[in-house]
Amino acid sequence: MASNSSDTPRPKLVVFDLDYTLWPFWVDTHVTPPFHKKGGDVFDSFNEKVRAFPEVPDVLQWLHDEGYIIAAASRTGEIRGAKQLVKLFGWEKYFKYAEIYPGCKKKHFSRFRAESGLEYSEMIFFDDEGRNIRDLKEVGVVSVLVPHSGVTRKLVEQGLAQFAKQRRVGVEK
Image 1 (cartoon, rainbow, N blue to C red):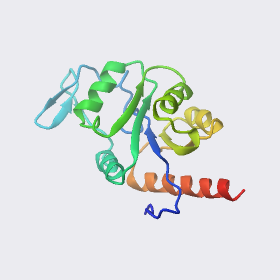
Image 2: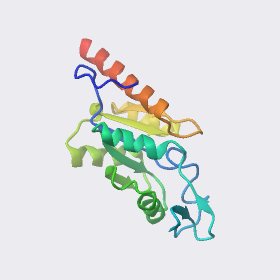
Image 3: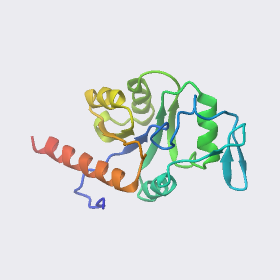
Image 4: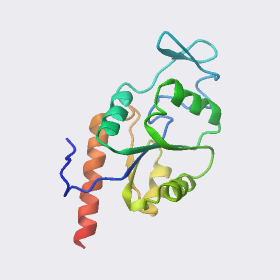
């Protein structure tokens, strides 16, 4: 479990990719916008049910309750659909920042840095694509590769522990 101890380094910004990280599909190819809500469930334009990975709502609530600032970074071309799903899933209340448009994740994080005033070393990133993980590690963002099963509380706790360990080592040098 992640420690709340004041001597444990914590990221000031927790960033999640969307496709195959928070939900099990590519919003630009596997589902068909526009989306709508019916009886608490989300559906695409063909009335196919659209779901997030099972633990995601609880993970976002937990991080929010713990006082983390949360953001979304997606390189999808289906900008409107991705934003619509974030809203329909009720996640906009968690994301202080959202960079959802095609392009390199370094550009997304450059905007997070400019908007938040935080340094890359104060951020952690969860994504399913190795290229994005490599790009952001290059600029100093602690980056966690998400397996095909998506974000889970255990994975986020491991990521937070990795962040703390890497930042403690950085302080001791």
